[in-house]
Image 1 (tube, one colour):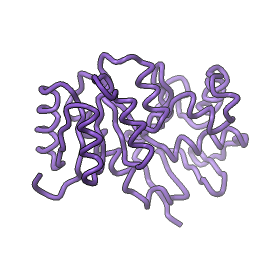
Image 2 (cartoon, one colour):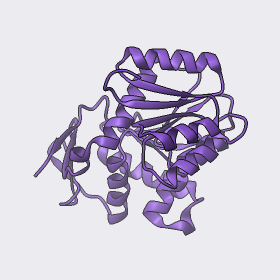
Image 3 (tube, helix red, strand yellow):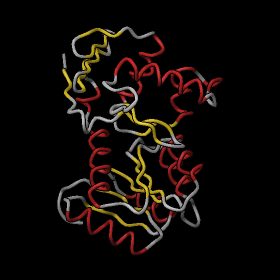
Length: 240
C-alpha cells in the first residue's frame, strides 16, 4: 500500500466487487486491504492496524456477522457492512453486535465513499464526541444542560424523551437498531417492544422536527431502526 490515507479492510467474496471497491477507494485517497473471505479478513486484521472494516455479510465460511462479532471482541474500529442478498435479520444482527453502518448493494461510489469517510471521522473525532451543545438548523440541544430549543423557543422534553434524543445525537449518522435503542433507553425487558419506541419517536418528532410528518432529522430505516441525520442539517458543535 502507498500513501498515508486511512486504511480500509475490504472483505467480500466477489472478486469484481473487491476490485471495484478497492479501485474507487484508492482514487479517493484511502488505502484498501482486500480479503476474499472471513478467515483472510481476520488474519489481515490481526497483522496490521486498520481505520475501518468494510464487510460483506453473505460469505461462505465465517459469515460477516461472525467476523463482526470477532472484531468487536478486541476492537472498536468502525465497521460498515455491505448488504445485498443477505437476510434482513443478518443485517440487524450485525448492527446489534456493533457494526456502525450499512450500505445496500448495488451502491454508488459517492454513497460508499461518504459512508466510509463519515464512519472514520466518527471513530477518530474525539472533539465532536466531547461537544456539549449542538445545532441542527433551527434546533439547538444542550446535552449537559438538558435544554432543547427550536427556533429559539424552548421545548419541554420528558426525562425519557431527552435520553432518547441524547442517544440519537451521540450516535448521529449511525443506524441504531430498534433493539439497541430500547435496551439503552428502557432496559432489556423492553428490547422487543417496537410499538413503545414508535410512540416515543412520534412524540419526540413533534417537538424537534419542523414538519413532524416529514422528518429530516430522525429518519426511519425500514425493518432496522432509526438514524439521526446531520448531513442536511449543517451540524455545528460548541465546545465549552
